[in-house]
Amino acid sequence: MKQNGDRCDKIVTVMAINALEEVIGTEPKRLPPARLLAAMEDALGVKKQPSPRLLAPREREVLDLLSKGRAYKQIADEMDLSMGTIRTYIRRLYGKLNVNCRTEAVVIYLTRSISG
Image (tube, rainbow, N blue to C red; front, side, top):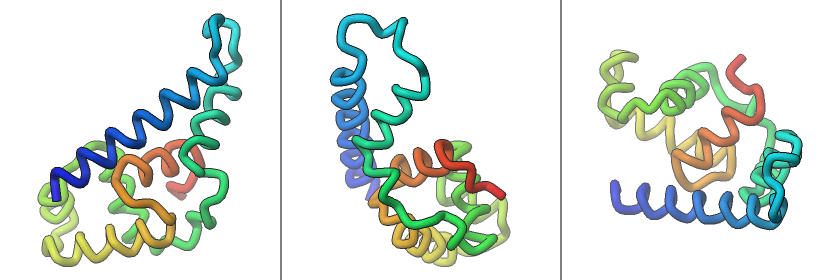
């Protein structure tokens, strides 16, 4: 499972870098941050995602912990749940956000105020 996560992280990183290279050109200091963010969202397909408000409170809590870099085991311990339950929450929130890996989910979480 770690290999798939690493591969997904690399794919998302390459997509984001390619999008930034298209937008930035030769003068990155003059590009507004909003334009950089929009390019990353386009590259990752973030704007096409369903509303993250569809996430259950516990799914949002798991996503918040994922965004803080916690491992599945740490999340399970912190929430006092089994690893199986955490995997179920993660599988469901990935489905609702239409993503395939932690990095994509965290990008959506951080770029679209869905924590509340």
